[in-house]
Length: 230
Image 1 (spheres, one colour):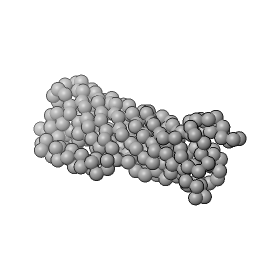
Image 2 (spheres, helix red, strand yellow):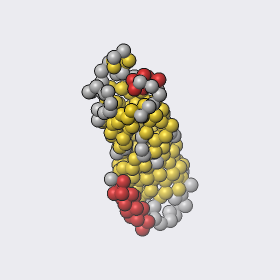
Image 3 (cartoon, one colour):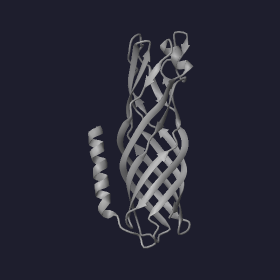
Image 4 (tube, helix red, strand yellow):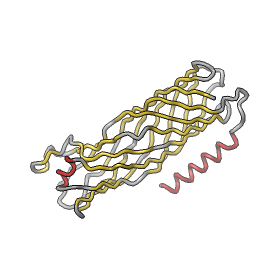
């Protein structure tokens, strides 16, 4: 999957290159700032490992974070967008039985992580540059790096002691649809909705006892932003 996605990224950049040309207005560059509203359509295997009862699973809490992007205008209809969110604190919540013996499980925040997830998209914009309203669609590649991975006190209680968390990075496709509205020659307002494929394997190590699960995070992101062209 990773090799295929890297190949797709190179193809995307290759396709974008011949589309680039100067804009007579000189406004080929744009920065955007706004808000990400992220819903995780997550799906995880039941947790496996020593002394693990059946039916232990996880869910990921939704969140909001800052959206930032640099956009390069390639032509009237094409642009290249590099988007990133301020690394949010993502909470993993237990799903399954209410208790594991005397320890609460269902609904407990058992681990946290921050992630940096830049996406590179090639967008196709409908209508011409003079249009106030311009719908667009985009396709590209997302890279997600998880860091500051921590087991909470509730997670340590579930696993039976201090636990270290491993969550490898992910590379996958991303698609988006959006709408922009021209406020002035330099400012536009944007609303977009994107779907990304993000997959990782969570490993919890408690004094050598290993518990694992595969997680499809599958974030759905609604973005509201303002762009300034220069």
